[in-house]
Image (tube, rainbow, N blue to C red; front, side, top):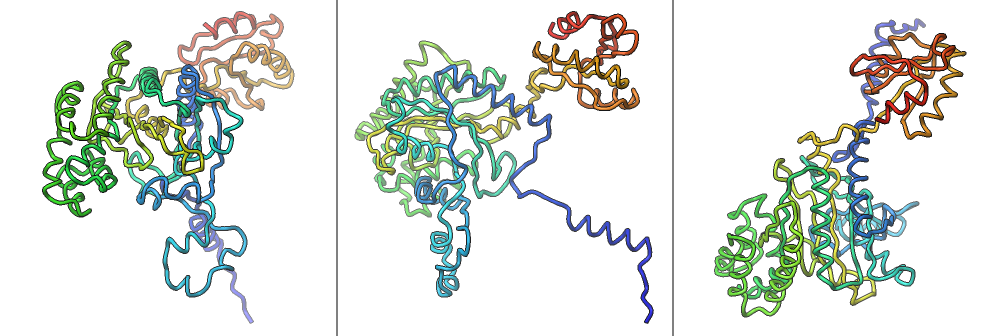
Length: 473
């Protein structure tokens, strides 16, 4: 028997094929972030966190996964479809019969096979947190939270399946001053980022009033879900969706002048007060918006504030003021949203606790800042000084200097081996390190270092204290 061994060339081809076949990937709608990108993201998180704390909010965290019973039914029918469900551990099919599997009833199977799901947002888990820890927290409770959420959505520009939310909520207070402060908080965050935004404001009570006066109060969810898409799909498509939900053409016609209402904020509310005069709920919503506008006028926002009657936010738990933020200089969806949800904790057995909150979409803010190139130069937080490694003796001296730079708050590192100067300088350039410290024999004898500015090329012989002061300046 003769055995033919494959040639070296064939072996290489097979190896390359195996490498290509095993090339790793990540799920659609998720992303890796490089060190530079993470520095930018941390700038976003740190800026938002600073403003949250400035307004008196305290940080909490909740688990990535919640019981499905906590999540289901809180986001409307469309939201429930976007929940990532987690298969039960172990033999998850043991309690499911062939008949159920063959029936292919997705919702019924999911209920049988999955007890947990990844959180869809941070608000519902927060409501659960409040109910579970009600005896440990002081009301009004002002919390903020910066964590990832997951949605089984179709990935597209500015829309991801895994993304971070940065939430601030107040529970245990009915005061509309909370809405005023949250608008001021939003305004301060975007002022610090340098992003020009339009803050859209509406009230779900006004939307309920509109549904009443067009004769379709029971269709409030269908109406709000449809008109919330006006910017995305246009008026004709919105009308088609309304008709498809069983709303009569006469009612759709009566809706048109309301959702297309133009003018200044006060003019819109004055017109609405006449249109909704027969709706007690609608009038209450108008009163709430007028209160907010009155308070904002005492300390005007930097950003544009617009009453937008098409704003619905599409989530069932909002009951009062609703807010959404759009960037003016970039084509992208909402970058912040929120509102009041008077009855959310009631579904967890704790009725009568009012809440209001907002959520910043960190990933969309990241995209906006990238497109507009608005990151401050020092936000990248890279190494400020690299000590070149000339050899064992020089290395020991550098190691004695490094703690002094770090104690002064200067981000410092030493090249880990005595490589060629060109390689070490290339490393510094690749990491965009501003200064390089050269400590050779002459510098050791003088008790100093040669500090090189990698941008200008300038070199100075300085003491450690002088070098520290120079970098800090």
